[in-house]
Length: 536
Image (cartoon, rainbow, N blue to C red):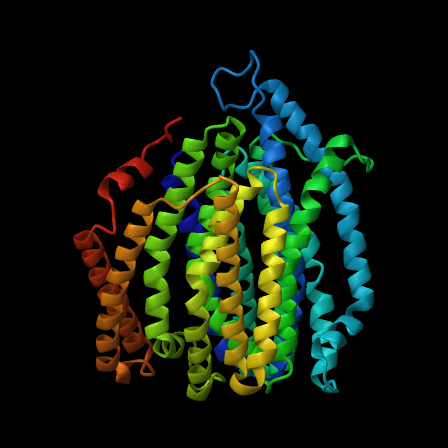
């Protein structure tokens, strides 16, 4: 499968998931608003997600996928084509996954048990101010209810890695949709109870917290079904530290530490937001939901798609192939991310108003959230580039360098957050995140160049410059269109939808028209990217 096809599969399903997530946040904002209760809920929801990204999606995937893929695609007489799984390879991969699962699961159970006990202290530390006697118990309860989700979704990630190794990307890209559907159902049910029996915001929030763990059970069942379809038959054995499990741990540990920097960044961000007025955590969450839409569709899809191919090229010492894949990924990422960042920056408040405003989320909440979004998207290209560049290190089993980059970024974020917090409040936290992300990109590119792994070719830089010019023209058009549609942004649902479609259509027409005219899009490269198989 070509890079663009794999990205298309992952990206389209991720887009569906992100749209469902956006719908979830739209309903969440209307049903629960932005207040102390929602701050407590979002704070509790962040904690299991931090550990999910730390232990599962980041460190584990980076170490497990190349090792599992290597065993699965071992070549012997049973393998008729290069790259297909042999019979011996399939059995070797099954044995390896069983060994990993048997060690992985007890550790996850222990982690969940420890945090269930220590959760009051965790929430207290993150607050760093006199705790609110009303919201503190809520945050502890919400976190305890939702934390088992880390165990369930970590197993989901294990199964996803197995499926990605055979280029079966769809199930792993689709499972987040289940969470969004379940939470939407819980929110709508809670709103119905509020209208019929007077259920409070707090009671609704409890119900949505329980829905998170319930969704995790459904996600695990979905991925388990698919790994059985592919013939992997996951099984548990008595925990045993085999040489391969030990090697996996050695590779994953630095990645976990590096991922820890990103996740510590999230917790430190929460620490700073908790020192601000009620609603600050919620404002950042709603803004980041829109910021994460292109990041998830573009950055995560590209990162997932290029790692197996990069690993193959690096393993066969095919530098030309590895460079080509890396350049293709950067070009495609910037082609889509730059206009997304410009559009979100120019139309931040209108987008937030059209999508979130209503019910318990008023126009004042939308204005603050729009300002936060406009600040966050300044770093959107950097966030995506980090996702695209890190696989170049992981493909070489180098998890140390991303660790260093991540901790440098974290140090920069903390420094600027302390500096900007008093003056800019929640905006200062957003600006600090942006600065740290760009420092991370600069460091990764510098190391790739110094080690001879990859240098950005001048032709790619020229094409990105043309993309920036096309995006600037699009931004000017959006600025004009935004003012013409001002009265539509907070009108009825149909008027909001028309305004949103008008802005998106205007942006797409101007940007892609200018991009083609300026040569920011190479037609021949698009043809190459859509080939069924990448050239060897």
